[in-house]
Image (cartoon, rainbow, N blue to C red; front, side):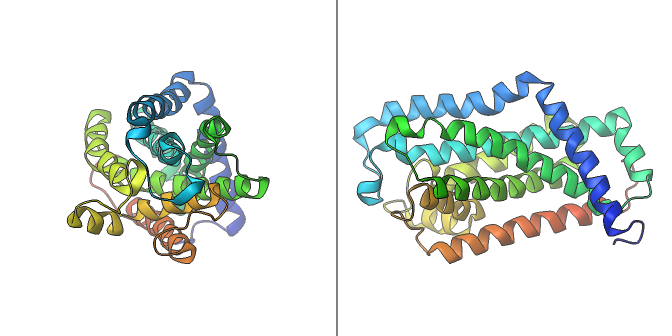
Length: 266
């Protein structure tokens, strides 16, 4: 799959697309506001509305529902950023940029890598900005936990961007892409443990949450933010392993889609 370019060419092309993705994002302030503002609003309204009426599982490290819900709001930020990042694939196709990229003598995998790295970076930046409100609700992890949280956010952002890439590549319109993402990604987020823990949920909900790969990324993020005092249900190794596997599968699926011939213009 690397026949058309060397390793150096692969990473050069990836870097070019990565830099373009990041630059274009910061030239569109509305994307920053949309991806960060909506989860922040959800966190404030839902967290304050639930208040002390719900005591989440997790022991004394979880001081209140706002602290419990914050990692879920961060994952929602990652999700929105992934959606906005992969919409650019549809726009690039309409504008003819994607045709030029596909005609260039570079590996198709570099296209995917550049897009996914760009989306993951933007998601991590915005997720980190939302995490800065943590000390206000008693969530003040040590420096090492902050660094681990950045790594987890990047991994989850990479996975979600790859998930969006798979659908954006085959979608003709932005409207259709939004409809599919709302149908798939929002239930995926809700059933990840962002709003409520699996304990106490209906049996079928617990099964779905166990099959949802995003659940493991969220559990991992929550665990590192609480410096290990809150453990994922299956342990840290399982949560990390599933999260890495999810990211790898999304990358491979995206790469395979780009390499497939298509009867319509790219």
